[in-house]
Image 1: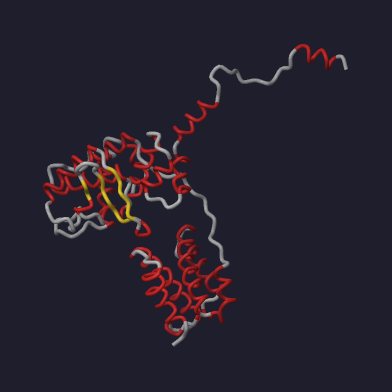
Image 2: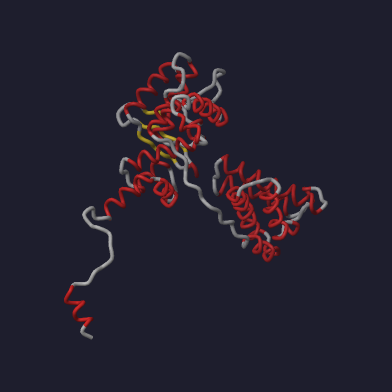
Length: 329
């Protein structure tokens, strides 16, 4: 057996699972990235994947794989960087276990992430949110479930996975109403609920029933609502809402759009970005700065504060005595 196989196994079982206690989503993302790398390297080396060694995954091979992701698989620079992060994590772990490959590993770790342009975020205006929330048919069970889901998403800004992972016991609707979720990095987060959201959730829970450990949002078969199902529901209601609010057709609306909309609501209400970062579960407040860049009204208010209203634009004109002095030189 080559050194790669046990190192790869130990990376997932020891490093990710035990030492870092990585979430299932992180493990899955790393697994997919490294699986693609190994398949690519095996094809180009003419070996079975199980016969690959660490030396077969040199910097040249990794670089060619990253180019393959962008040029042949059509991955974005952002996705390419995410794959590279998984590769860096594996080889950072391998560097300690296999110092004999230190030179090759250092060359891999030196591969930089690719810079890319960041587009402004997409979010919904108040009239668009109103139209979307009015789209579900409240005469049906699924419509009432979906309205509760959309109201909660637009008000709390929870991530798609956080929403679909909520249990009944995570919704606390008494004094100090809030939802509790396990976010990125296994960080527990509590998000307050408005009275309007509490009313909708109480109505849904009265119909939903179940035990505290049961999923909050379920299908007709009683299984937890999946992320794919959430995306399909949002797409359906966007189409319905666009009949009364055509501007929705100009936007690519996803669960993350609703998350952005919640953050923009907070920013528009004058909430400090450090508070918004805590609300959204951002580990770094720099992540929250994207909302400031997207808020045109905030920039317009800044201009209004810095530009004196009674000042007429023009060039500086010196006083007459100064002109007389200069003319006399």
